[in-house]
Image 1: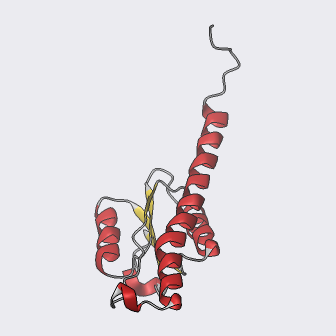
Image 2 (image 1 turned 30 degrees about the vertical axis):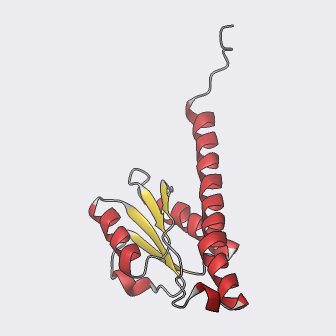
Length: 142
């Protein structure tokens, strides 16, 4: 486990743009926690720099698992790419209440929960770093 290598969390990472984002980070030497509802551990082959975590971003527990995986597997988390989203291929006027609820769950709540968990981890790391590396009992000059 390297604490020097930067770590990204990428949602919607099993195909298309999300898979491309994961590949881009890996080419730059980053470790990645890749998420989608149906992602499987073998989607990125034997690449030890990618941790695939299946789960629905609309579930707050998925967000928690993504951040925990980054920290447990790679020792840190540096950035978040909110790529997960759904498109419903029919006119807006034909949306059912279920369509609307699902779209809001993934595209809004999913963004909210993972961003909230990511920021909490960033704040915890910053506080830990300050305590460990920047301890100074002197008071600032008035």
